[in-house]
Length: 414
Ligand SMILES: Cc1cc2nc3c(=O)[nH]c(=O)nc-3n(C[C@H](O)[C@H](O)[C@H](O)COP(=O)(O)OP(=O)(O)OC[C@H]3O[C@@H](n4cnc5c(N)ncnc54)[C@H](O)[C@@H]3O)c2cc1C
Image (tube, rainbow, N blue to C red):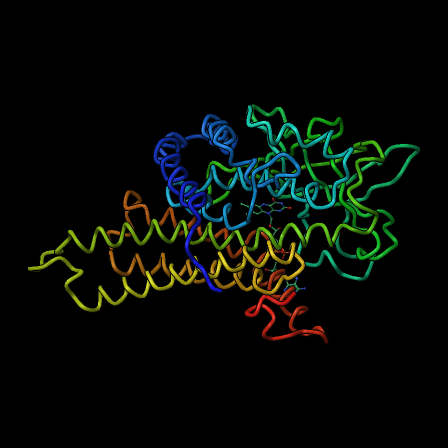
């Protein structure tokens, strides 16, 4: 049976998220103007706290672990609604979700008890982040030559792991008021003479652990209220129980988390494109540009608009199917998530530039808002595993596997 009807619970989530966005996110961007990266992040704190209270962190945690996540589709629905109004705050909420994702999938009961409650109690503004990417390059994290690839190391000394290295693009490492994140999931190699397939591992590191220094709050071109940092780990000590899974599980843990987010990036891209479409549609229905009729009456304009809408609808349904597939396969089936990440993120960039073609030169004015949306949307093909350096390589591995079944994604066979 194919059923695209939202359940009553999902429809409520959607409408509640729409109302939340209207109340908390509409004016957020304006408050960021003139501030530096840390200042802009700070502007989002009240909205982040409200999002936690509204249950949007819990929504990323399955019920047996204290959350409310029945399906990744639910998260996609909420993400689209929030991002269709403002994209930085939802990115922060999802980045915290990514930061705890390894814990959710690979944690043990002791680790759940120690680290999870703060993220599911619906209070405050807890921050987590996945500290995976490295300054000299991330795409080759699976390079089998031990002398290349990731350089962050973890060495067991007595009962403690000692972590040394540098990371880039770590969300929330500086945290609210520079007080650091509550929890970081840090990828590091145990045994620098071994390939990452054996050595790359994931560690749960409380963000305030001594030895963590923030080198930079990166000034990005879009998502101005989301925080990403360059972080130095210098003799950072955590108990040996803070290893997630086993030594050498790092690639599996990261790729499982990135398979979930590959579904969600589609929803993010659709959210931004939807906003661009609404700006272009409104313009086309109301502006004559000196002619006799609103420009939507010109067939070429209407054609661009209808093509844009078709792409948005297609992107949304592919996103939902990818998320549904993730649920059903427990993240084991990667193909549809990867296709969605690449295809939808790139398709939606085209939707935004199409919106500019509809609006014409007015699109070049800052206040029209389309340039801002393009800058936000440009993150989606580039981050969460760049489409060229990471995601298409993952797809190459899927397609070239001897057991590859070309109908499996369509037929839901895992
Ligand atoms: C807003 C934002 C949020 C982010 N959040 C996080 C986060 O939560 N956690 C985190 O760890 N990181 C995060 N990142 C970083 C980001 O997800 C990854 O670092 C990034 O996707 C990897 O970059 P890349 O694919 O361009 O790899 P790079 O290693 O920088 O590669 C650059 C380019 O080189 C080429 N290339 C390199 N190697 C190959 C190869 N083997 N085959 C083919 N081409 C190759 C490709 O053209 C690739 O695009 C974030 C980034 C941004 C902007």
